[in-house]
Image (cartoon, one colour):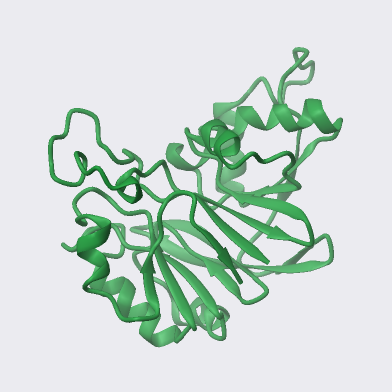
Length: 254
């Protein structure tokens, strides 16, 4: 299995528009961050977690030729705004895109993309097949078990995903004990870490490291970083040996 970090930034990305801070003006390519998304490649099939505003750019950069399914974490714009571009795969492979999401995301997709779900669709619109999921029920995709893990983004439920021994969680501030149990045993854990200071709806660095210490993965990767975190080089110096800052385009063998 292979994990590709398509984007590792927040809703603003890095550099932030009109910002002159040391992170936004960094010449280190690892400090250039598109909106958060990831791709799991398993048995030669690609599964994308979230299609944010940069989805098209991410697919072109990674030279992705096909996507078997999309898993959505939640309905915020930086995670769903690129769904229209799945139509490129519809056209190429003559099939609908399987989309897995909870009821909140389903409602948002109908609101944001009414033309996709209209009774009489216009030629050329994206073709998607929605599969409603909940935190209570793992599901199979191409005979692989996917376990949803619910976290809270302040008060908003967000779904992370465990696939085999890899768990991907973004936009989390709290994780209930029952949900944390689903994560334990993961060899690779991806977790959001927004900045050094505390935030109302995201883990900061110290909170993310506390969760990693509880789960005890072999390797952990931090994503959904803001420019307030610091540069890749600066933050790497603060981390335990098995914890890494993810960056756009990073590919991890799992």
